[in-house]
Length: 356
Image 1 (tube, helix red, strand yellow):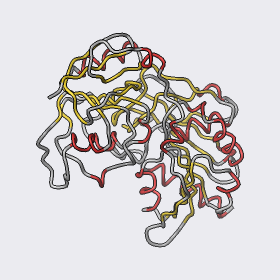
Image 2: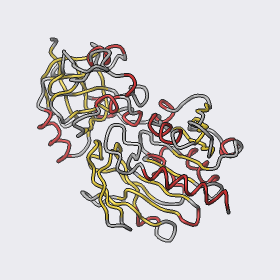
Image 3: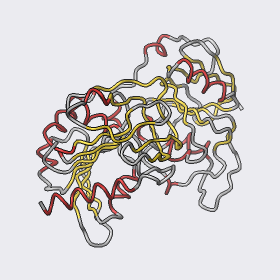
């Protein structure tokens, strides 16, 4: 195998071996803690612009299963301790190394990912490069910024996915980088889903006469999406609204709230989130670097979920606007399905609105 290096912006150097495409890359280095779900991680649009570090040591052991993909692979690079060359699963159609090559994604294996994750955890998310030399020019690495990523991952044209069985509701999904699992959860509950690109005017979204509006997950700094925030302002209060991940953050900004960048974010399928009303804690799937500042929405919304590890805001309710949002992924592919009931809560809101 060819020698390769992962070099961080703090000059830490990790020597390993090249996997995937024989190229070099620059990105924001984040670690993901899932023990399973590497395919869903690689195909999550919210990783756009980032180099993903898998903390679980063996990756690729069940191969490549297209039915498990959540979207297109838009990660900048991939870092693992060991990559499996001989996957074993009856659903597998290929090896992970071939998957990365086919998408021109470069990666590195054979490094101490535990040490790497500790550096990021202690010093915070930082830029890095996967390259072929120990002494690259670090200028571009230091200047790199994740930007314009929502337009990269959003759908380009409106689309419709029909409900399974009898149609109960019509949902307008604004696609900031939506995971397939969101549509799947709505469709199986009798919703016909009308998907719109991220920059669709609010008048066009409301023009399809939806029973509810879903704001999807997506990558990057929520504050960069000024046009999208304005469109959400125009839709709030018009129809029941449910926001996930980036949709949660954009709704807060639309209502005058603030967001903050976390030290190293939440990336994985094992994040504990406490329901503040029921005093229950759920295990959730998450992928984000930014969080809503709940106190910035005092008098406008109510914090309903909170991260049990770092106490960051994980959900808000805007009762007067028939809207609620969560930072985590209730569709949870991959991950636990503990919070899928939130889709049922959204359906109940739509039903109440129709009967009002």
